[in-house]
Image (tube, rainbow, N blue to C red; front, side):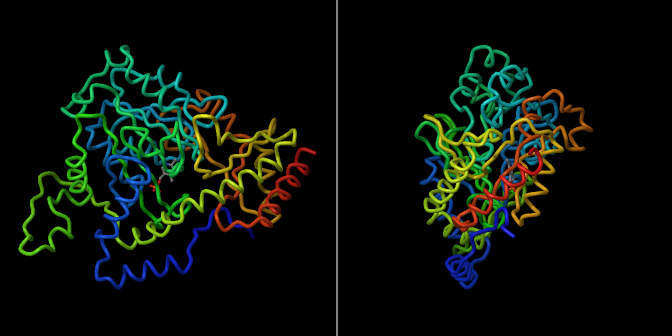
Length: 403
Ligand SMILES: *Cc1c(COP(=O)(O)O)cnc(C)c1O
């Protein structure tokens, strides 16, 4: 069976984790700090904070920004549930928008139309690793119309004076937008290092800060470092310094720090990340050259003049098939011992969001993308022979179902 997305765990990772285990320091410590610095250097962000997951990190961001009941956060209807769940946790309302025709990302026109005086943030999601239209989103939040109706409800929001631009970059570590790496394209970006993502720490994530001039990034980092550790004014590492045991808690915080064991995996992953991306790119190219001649294949976008994907997911679409035919094709592919997936079931299809009044018919483009989409395996250890097996399995399955 060809798995969909196994982690790349080899002796190098085992050795580095063993070193961390035997170092006497297994919670947040020197390896986490080093990993944060390397992510900052790689992405071009101004400051990075490592956390236990994308979900926990981005929820702390929303709460720090003061988002709560009565507020609205704009997200695409087509994303993983985490993007919306954290908004619900704060008591705010996820306002979902439909997608562009030409890619899987939120339509900026739809974002613009969804803005109200209660809009506090826009969270773009770089689906499959393909960046959203950052410049156009910034044009919208900086427009006179959007600024005029923006209602700040605390000092941070007042200081920014506009809607906050967030980036759900769970898929897009290493992707580029107009020559800049993701992590430095939004006010605040969160990455996921979950086991199936491009870069993994088993579970984990990072928050990259890139606020406009006037915001003090050292101070923001200090605030977040406390927020992710119960609100403690000193973390465990700082407390080990001689006589430095006393700390304060100014506000009850959260508990979602990254451990040095996770950071050990991340440091190895990051050190060979370019090699990982290069292999993913080759696999994308092989899929495209195999499918682009097929009348039934809709090739996903992953490279334009302005955007380069992180090659996270290859979102193949089968033109003209129904949802049931797509499901049958997937079944046929599995019969040939190849694992595939669907990214994503739009949020309005999920009970939690149906219950909250979201309706699939309001997002026709999200439905179009979902109904005929099949995600193919892409990972460093997938060899050329396996790539050919995947291609043959997909062709055979499509042939069998649609003739
Ligand atoms: C994986 C994923 C997340 C959540 O990441 P975790 O690190 O598991 O919390 C959020 N958004 C998207 C689009 C994802 O794919």
